[in-house]
Image 1 (cartoon, one colour):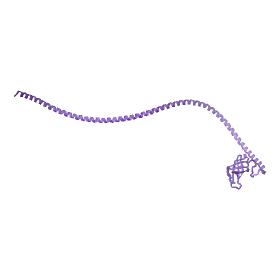
Image 2: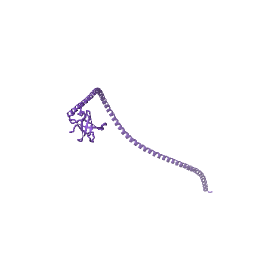
Image 3: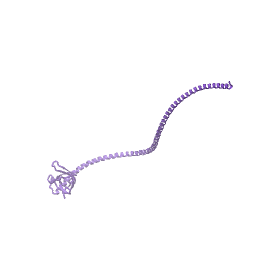
Length: 287
């Protein structure tokens, strides 16, 4: 055999041995690589699941974070609104505080003024108290004098009533005397018991008056007139008066009772259908 062939055979044997070793190594490495590949795939699958889970958790957290951010923004907006309201209230309260401070100062000034006024009033009250005491003393003295005067007036009133009664009696007597005198002057004839009871016409100065009230006599059913003149005006019993209305003669009146300031008289219609009314004028003699 040729030397080169042997060399080639040796080289081929060495190469075969090396190739076997390489094949063995390749087979071992192939199994190891396949196992590692499967392990890597399993790890990739697990990692993908974990990543998916983490992604889902992250998305959920992101959603929660967005919701919380929105809530915080809403809360922030509400706080901003509340802050604006509080600031407005603060401005209002500051204005109210300033007003209250001004009112307090005004009240303090008024209190000081009232204090001075109270002092002045106290002095005035003290002066009035002294004056009141003086006035009470004067009033008591005045009341005593008034009581004395009232007693004096009562006595004078009693004396006046007595004098008026006497004056009325004297006036009636005087009127009766005047009537008797006038009747005598006019030709009237007196009887032994006194004057005639026939109506007479007064011949002295004309007496004028008016009818104040008209009523009906229950006994005679005739008219009774109350006139505004009496014995003070020289009116006497049985004196005749003419009733005049609108300057026209109406009827006659005959006095049946004479008082000092008024008299009662019966109405003589003289056969006419007439009625005396309050306000009709009367004269003692037609002229």
